[in-house]
Each structure stands twice: as C-alpha cells, then as structure tokens.
Length: 102
Image (cartoon, rainbow, N blue to C red; front, side, top):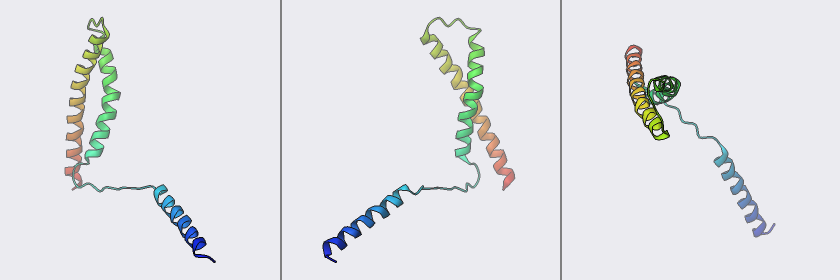
C-alpha cells in the first residue's frame, strides 16, 4: 500500500467523522433554581397572543379607526398594556411557585 492511498483513506475517515459530529444534535438542559425565566418568557409570549388579539379586536369596536396607521397605533398601544399586565402576572405566578417548591 502506498503512502498516498493511506493518506487518502485517513482524509476520508476524518471527513466522515467530522460530518457525523456536525450532524449530532446539541442538547442543552437546565435546572433552574428559583424562577425559570425561559418559561416566563415563553408563557408571556403565548398568552399575549391568545389574550391580546381578542382584547384588541374587542376594544377596537368602540373606537373610530379610519386609517391603517390609526389601527396599527391602537393595536400597539393596547397590545403593550396587555403584554405588560400578562408579563407581570406570569412572573409573579412563577415567583410564587418557586417559593413553594423550595
């Protein structure tokens, strides 16, 4: 066997090994002590959409919004209040649950 053949085989093996390593999933786990801020952010996001869209739509019935600019401005202002209220509520809930689990 020639040195060039041996070198070629090693190169192919190195390529396939690095390909397998790059394809393997990188899994991270956490074990938060206290408040799980990832859960707080995800729950706030979902609840803001689920609760906020009907609230904005319902409240918009009581206002005269003639242009798209007025509609967008209204949705942003009401959505911000909904997001803030839900975010604070979810955080307080997570904090109360973290206190009881310790």
